[in-house]
Length: 207
Image 1: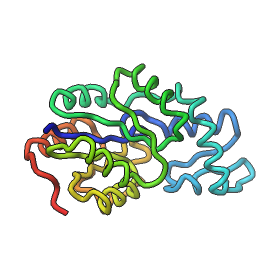
Image 2: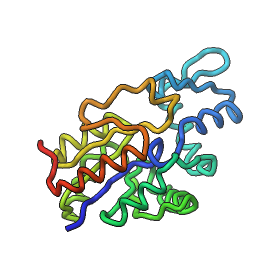
Image 3: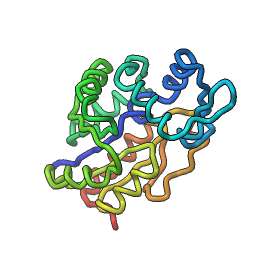
Image 4: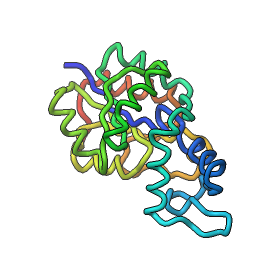
């Protein structure tokens, strides 16, 4: 049995928030504040009105897939995944609509990252559990930028090691460590070493 790495994409492998904010300003005259915490409270029009949650989702749907070419690679992500792939299976679990899957696969390939991609909507605990049943790994690690997904995985698959990563520095300073994660690391060089150490134990996380 091999280890399994299940990793998010946006703000883990690819920068998204800064480019989303730039697009909102350029194309829609909407200001995006990374200190806002929640996307739904971070987007304001020129008259100062805050967009509601439904409007926020409509703009996110507008960014994906049409504006994905704006996204840039997180430093050291490609190299870390290449090294980890020598000993583990890797799945990119991304919360996008299913019609974006091929776009995400092609986008990652353009950055030299070629691994299985699965799209998901909602909490990531259930799809992580399904991947565990499929791969039956010796040990599994989950990487994501959102605390809600760490809690979902902790509830559904507590044997998975959970690493909280927010790769955008201007956003990371406003995001506290996820309570349900085992560690918070925002840099792939250090994260690679942490993941390799979890793989080396050959044992699942303690519930």
